[in-house]
Length: 161
Ligand SMILES: [Zn+2]
Image (cartoon, rainbow, N blue to C red; front, side, top):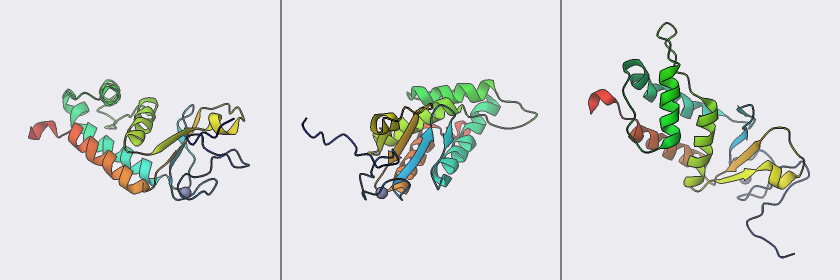
């Protein structure tokens, strides 16, 4: 069989070897280790994903409280806005992010900024009961920054338009 360069190598624990430093497991290049079935992040440092989600909640607030419509072309983002609008309870004043859509969006966005999205089933052969993904980026924070800038532009404050 010929070597396929796109095929990540697996370590003994079933984690791929990082395409940037060659280490198995949770190195500094892991943007997220995501259980997409239960929507949980298992990497050591989830602050990047957490702050992106809080940032998104803040941007969504005027859309859900005032009922503004999202007019951009990002279908997943549109789904997040719709879900948050439908589930907004003024009494609790919380913006509900649909994690199914948010995580699909996160994987898609990360890939579009050059991050490597790997389906763990493809490397481990371990048959996880959950759908697990690991995402690597050479500069994790640069990718998060690009995603923040992107949602800033996609979800401008409707009252300032
Ligand atoms: Zn690494």
